[in-house]
Each structure stands twice: as structure tokens, then as C-alpha cells.
Length: 327
Image (cartoon, rainbow, N blue to C red):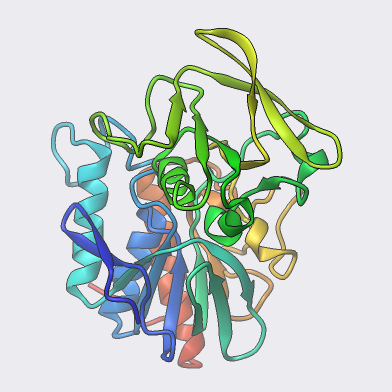
């Protein structure tokens, strides 16, 4: 197990947790739904692991002011509210890992979750990835997927040693992946649609071989047999940035559930199919929050979903007929 870790508002996010362990529950996503699920699961004495790819880039984390969360008076930055949720879950024993979930094997009594760092096993899974995972594809993205377009720098960076690559993104995750790529590529071009990166405070320092293009829109990914560049428009007008590979990290309004690969049912826009118990059609797999297409998208409803999902997971792994409520 790696000892390396990062701190987010007082919470330790490991690069790896104990992957020899059979966890009672793995929660994919650390927003309000995932944090609430973790709190309820850990309080029920379930061994609980939260896997979050980018703790500072979720919808709550980047919200400037929250004024309608019950019990929180006045206005509070979303990042502070989320940090309090994480600290509460951690106080009951929840482990947090920062990693990209690349796939799952949800069938049977022992389920597997595959990340870019390790494989974890659990008795139950809660999907709580929110609805900022994907965006509309830009021209050329689909055409060159697998031929230079990638969605995982840690998976594919080694293929671009001493080459130029582009990262298209607007979040902390995009910056982290771009910085990782600088270890391999000769030059990394970070193309940012806005004037700042969501979830990043202040002005970060960049490695020498990382070039950042602010307020720049990626118009098209170009090439022949493989990717050769990205057509962009920005403060310097329209031009082409040379790149042998393009890594996509644009946030959108749909859930990032591609890692389920059809093994857990989703609708045509990627929202996870659940019943009123937050249970998917796959036994022992639950979903909570905005990734399940709720009637309203609010922090309090996402937290409620997480509580229900955790309690139902507890009932499932202990083969109970009734839910054991908490106070």
C-alpha cells in the first residue's frame, strides 16, 4: 500500500488503500451523496472506502456560497461544507482514496472496483459520481478515440514519451493530469475554456514544459491516421496547437458513468437506474445523488440519497429483512 497522500481540508486522501482487504462497502464519489453514504456506513460499523478522482472539483466543492443546507446558518463556501462532511465520515473510520475508477465487476457476493492504481474488493458498491462527469464531445473526439484521444493520463502517458500532447479541461483534475503528463511528454498544452480552473484556489505554479491557454476553446481535434493537433480559438485568435495525443477532462452536465460499461444499467444519458431504495438491478449495487436522475438536484437530497443507499447496503450485506435505522 502506498504511503503517499494528499490533504483536502484536513482529510487525508491516500493514493492507495488496503487492496488485500474485502471492504464492506466501496463508495465511488466523495460529494454530498458519497460523503453521507460513508458517514452512515461507517457508523453502522461497515468497513468503508471512498474513491474520489478529484475531491476539489465536484459541484459542491466549487460552489462559492451555500445558504440552504439545514442546520448551517448563513452562507458557507461549498468546499467548507464538503470538508465538514468528509471529516465527519472520517471520524467514524472511513478511508479516502484519490484515484480514477476505470471499471467494475459488480456481480456476485464479492465485487471488484478497478482504479488506475489498484483493484479493490467489496461486498457492496454505492455509485455517487454526481453529474459533472462528461461533456458533449468536440468534433474529432469520437473519430480519434483510441487513436490519440484518451481519458486517462495515468493509463496512457507512457505512450507519449518525448512527444507533444494537449489536455482539454476546466478543473483541478485536468491540472493534475496535465502535471502528470509533464513527466513523460516534451510539452503539455493545457487548454482551458475559462479564466480559471474549477476547484483550484489562487494561481498555481506550472512545470516548465506545461503551457496554459486561458479562455481558449477547443474547436476540433485534427489528424489523419492519428491525432496531429487541436484547432483552438482564444485571445490570440484561431490557430492549431500541435499534439500527438489529446486528453479530455471537460466537465459537463451528465454523470461520468462510462466505467460501468453496461454492467450496471444506465439510461441513454448515463444516469444510473435505481428503485426507491437506491438499489440498481444488480444485487448489492446502489446509486445515490445526481447520477441517478433525481427529480431535483440539491445538496440535501443528495445527502438523503446517500443515507438511504448506505442503510440499504447494510441490510443487503447482513441479509436482513428490515433496515436498522440510526439516530
